[in-house]
Length: 153
Image 1 (tube, one colour):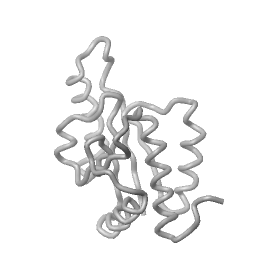
Image 2 (image 1 turned 90 degrees about the vertical axis):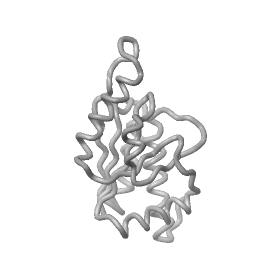
Image 3 (image 1 turned 60 degrees about the vertical axis):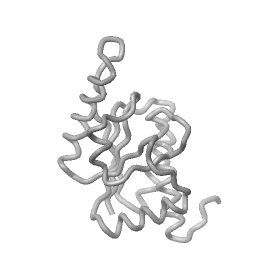
């Protein structure tokens, strides 16, 4: 199983250890790849809509017309067990799963409209960088649930 995550920007150094930890753990269950695409611009010099559209272009270029699941504040909230079942059902339908996280300003409507599904990590707002870590952790947890393995040691 191949899982790809596409996200604008880059990861802060202080989050790198958590990122590395979960990518390593996930590789036991799936081939995980995370691709950071260019941000849409500088909020000090460009308006939000322009930035969101540029980020959408960068994301679409990476997507290459593939189906994707959007991690979105307005998506459906799932428990960890529900997410595990969602992941299992999606794995059974697709040879690869592509997830997209929006940048610091969110996501352009053109991407939101074309998503195969929309999932919310929480009703709370997190930085897009924290969403990467939360996504990796929850995906690792989902695989542990599906394999009926203990999560805590």
